[in-house]
Amino acid sequence: MTDTSAILLENRGILAVSGGDAREFLQGLVSNDLGKVSPTQAVYAALLTPQGRYLHDFFITEVDGVFLLDCEAERSADLLKRLKVYTLRSEVSLADASADYAAVVFMGDGAGETLGLSGTPGEAMAFGGGLAYTDPRLAALGARVLVPRDGAESALEAAGFSLGKTEDYERLRLELGVPDGSRDMEVEKALLLENGFDELHGVDWEKGCYMGQELTARTKHRGLVRKRLMPVAVDGPLPAPGTPVMLGEAEVGTVASGLGDHALAMLRLEAVENAQAQGETLSAGEARLTPQQPDWMKIETAEEG
Image 1 (cartoon, rainbow, N blue to C red):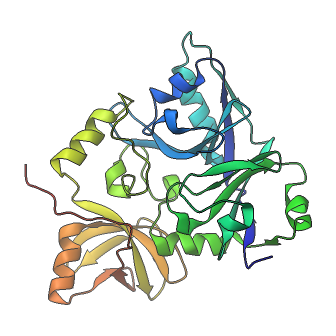
Image 2 (image 1 turned 45 degrees about the vertical axis):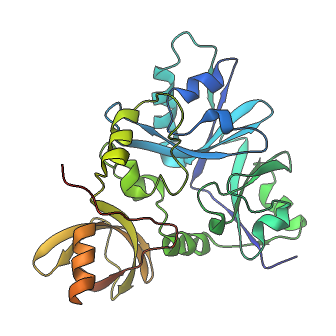
Image 3 (image 1 turned 135 degrees about the horizontal axis):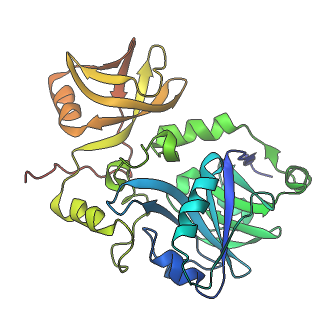
């Protein structure tokens, strides 16, 4: 085997959406195009408020004609409840399938190749009674797998994969600057484009209407993004989530999730630019923060208006 490790993600829940109208039902609600989803393609998407604010994010896959949503386990009941509101008379069945499937992430050199994937974001294939797919956000995040929960861990070990620690994946995610659901995006307040959903392939700009689409599109076309969630190197004690980020005496952002000497922070782009130009330092609590813009992140100066 390679240096690939398999990490069982206990913090993920799985919802199943089935029925003759399932694809159309989801298409009218989420930020990505369900037309792309198939047994060979997965997508990353979000459910928004009618006003375009973040509610939930998840991966959508298709297994045996059923759409599986890999979401935050502790908020899966809320997502299920919100989806049920929109079923109306549609031929759609919604169920919690967390007892049936486990979410696993494979990381390390050649993670996707180990599973038979080429590394193209979102590429999927049948695997062990479930589905394996390259992370549709960034290939650098490795591959994700949905497998039958019963015996998942022993099956991975029997296949020759070493079992990794959740902290290893958390560290990689933070270094790459990728948000982790409601830990990093404030429910009913966060905007998708402030959190990288465009570059992370979580929005389809060509699909028809979906809930919250108007604000998302307006933000994109008017260049209204003035702050971004960014990875920061932490020099000093790791600040708790919610700790204000300061530039001198001015508050310019907020710390989100973190581990060790890495964290994410929502920062005003103007403040980041000024700090870099003037050689000043951002701080949070007793720590110094250094923004580290990842290669995938595109930052454009917001237009006034």
